[in-house]
Length: 139
Image (cartoon, rainbow, N blue to C red):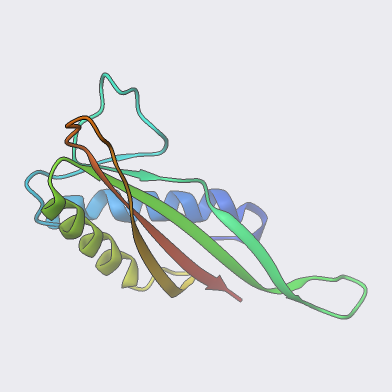
């Protein structure tokens, strides 16, 4: 884990979330521990189930009225995608990620979670997808 600081907030939040999820994957209880990727892997080498963590989005809110115009609140959005060949694994892994990120993370506070099923590919493709969106706040 790294210390989350404002000057490198995207990098440090991403590293912290990636490390937190990666360490916990063996405890999720899926048919096999999911691989964690920092981007879309090569389709020839990807293993399922897998978790892809998208780049972090940061919004500055509640700027001060003085001349420095510093932000007192940051909203941080982290999107993860889960890919699996079994529907059951999608839900097990999603629950594992949500429960893992509900634990306190120093420097940010979880304010919202949202999940949605993604695409179900046609032509007898066995891969299913679910997207989880996490919103954190930093003051």
